[in-house]
Each structure stands twice: as C-alpha cells, then as structure tokens.
Image (cartoon, rainbow, N blue to C red; front, top):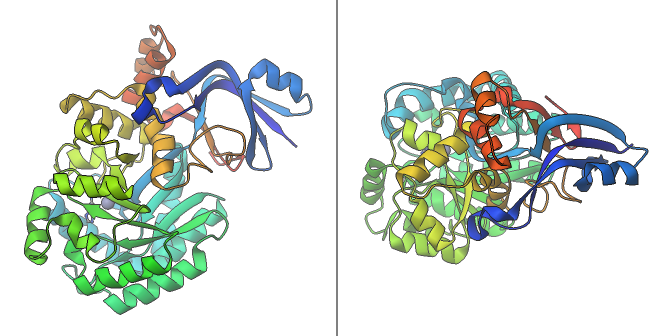
Length: 427
Ligand code: GUN
Ligand code: ZN
C-alpha cells in the first residue's frame, strides 16, 4: 500500500554548486508518496492527499523531509578509532589506523564493526555511502552483508596495499587483483550494492599493484574507483620520492589507468593546475572531507578555484580521519572551510552537496540523493529545533534557509527524527 509522508519538503531542480542555491526548492507543507520502496510522487500535501485517498498518512508536522545523506568517502573499519589524538596523516595511519585495520582479519570483528558503523550512519541520517574496507576480503563480505540486510544502497571495496604498511596489512599486485575481482563478481550489482576498486593511495601501492588494479578497472569500467589524492604536503613529497618520474601525484594514477570518469579522489586539497585540469577534463569527482582535513591538519580545500573550474564534488565524513559520523557536522565544516577560503557556501548548496552532490559523485543521482518520482525512497525527517540552542535561533528565522542553517551548524544525530531506506523505517 502507498504511504504518504507529510512535512516540509526539499526538492532539487538543478546543480546547486553550478547554478546556485535557487535550484533548491522548498515546500512549507508538502508530501512524499512512497510505493514499493520508490518515490511515486512529490508535491503539495493537500494535492497528494486528494489524489491518493487510500494512502496511509504519516504526518511529520514541521519536520523537514529530505533525501537521506550520502557519504561519499568513509572508512567503516575506522569506526572505533574516531577521535584519536595528536597525529598528522602518516603518523596517524601508523599509530592508530593500521593497528586497528589488522583486527579485520577476524570475521567476527568485521561483522561487529560493520553493524555498529551502519547503525551509527542511519542514526545520523546517512542512507548511502562509499566505504573503504581493509585488505581482508572478509572485511568486504561483512560490510556488504550488513548493508544488504538493511536494504541499503552502498558501495565499498577491498583496500589494496602492498608496501609501506605492516606485514599483516600487505597483499601483492596479483592477490589484490584476484581478491578484488572475486569480490566484484560476487557483490557488484547484488541488490543495491556496488563494488568499488580501491587502491588506498600511491604511497602504499607499488607501481605493479596500481597497474594491476588499473587493468581490473579497464575490465569493469562501470565500477567506481576510489583512492586518496594530495591530502597532506608531507604525503605529496613522499609520493614524489616513491614515483620519481611522475609529473605529479595524479600522474601516479593516470600512468596506471586509474584516472577516469568513474573515479573518486578523496581530499584533493593541494592540487597542481595540471591535476585539476585533467580531473575536470575526464569528469572524475573530488570528494571533500572537511572534518578530516582540519582534524588531521591537512589543509583547506580550495573552494573558490574548484567551483570556478566547475569540478564535480562530493561531500564526505572520512570517518575515522574525519571526526564525526554526521553529515550535518560535515556540512558545518565545509561551510567553515568555505569561509576560510572566502567562498561562503549557501545552506542550500551545503544540503545539496550532502545529498545530490555526493550521489552525483558516485554516479547514482538517478537513484538516490533527491526526492522525486522514480527515485529510491531513502529519506529522512529532520527536526529543525532539536536542541534549545538550535530552536531559539530557528525561532528568529526570516526564511527557510535561516531556519535550516542552525541545524547545519549545530545539529547532530538528535536532529534526525527518522531514517527510511527503500521506504522502510530503519531509525
Ligand atoms: N590516506 C591513505 N589512507 C588514508 C586514511 O585511511 N584516511 C585518510 N584521511 N587519509 C588516508
Ligand atoms: Zn580516506
């Protein structure tokens, strides 16, 4: 039977980063009609009630109905080491990340953390994500099984590393290719799951391994490919030492066929003009991870330049380098980095980025990231007065975005009144 959800509703009529905040439309009293896990209609509450008298009605009052958040870059295995103090990227990896990732050889641990992570994501209104796993195939199995059980649209891949990592976290060019291929064939396209080819980053892959994964991607070009790019200055200097003949960091991927329209490059803070030009030219996506960039001390994403170039950009927590599971907190951090680079992003652009922008970066915007007929019914109800501090500020709002902005800046999981995945309430 059809279900009609009533509340304030956000709709997208274009690309908010390219065309501006006006493309995000708001209905004060709207509705979303859900049937068979899909969105059947979006419109004015009264019209939908009249047209669908049979539908079961859930009235969310003043809550805002929005597409579920899409986190375009996260490391689910780092769930339990989020907020680890005092290190910059390479030391942070060696001190906190790698020891924790070693534990994912144990399927029970992988299952426990995958479950914990997905529960935290849903609690925070995140309905889809693109996650790194660890080098262990069981870490991928555990994640996909948990996402499948929840009916989620989720993307993930085995993180490949064959050097500059502890022995217990190293594969080889051949095993990275073979294991990734087996996992891809088993999981890609099953229910709502997608396999993502995942070399961690150039410092932890030999040229042979990058080439092997480039070959795998060429055999499966419809798959996404995710990796890290130009996150921290020390890292870039290290890449230069490890790949002395490369023109720049991107070239280490480009040379081995790891540059293409279905690529997602996490961070991309310190880009050379050539790198930015090539990424724009091929239409790959940059994934902005603002809480991670400040937490690990990586630097400021160059918002003015990237917007002027018209890059495809997704938004992400990068948990546990990122310091939060919340895409609200992540939007706030993106706003703050925008301020520091003299590019204040409009609340409508931030919200669009956390939903449709990330969905576009994952090439899934025909399925998720918007409330529109035919889209999958992954949505959230957001309480725009979830704490006294937010409520007293929202009370003074003169327009909808002034009412939403306090939740962007100060909101957390308490603002997520409910999360629905394929029409089913999961939180
Ligand atoms: N670069 C390579 N691996 C990682 C990781 O796990 N987190 C972050 N933030 N950067 C990385
Ligand atoms: Zn990352």
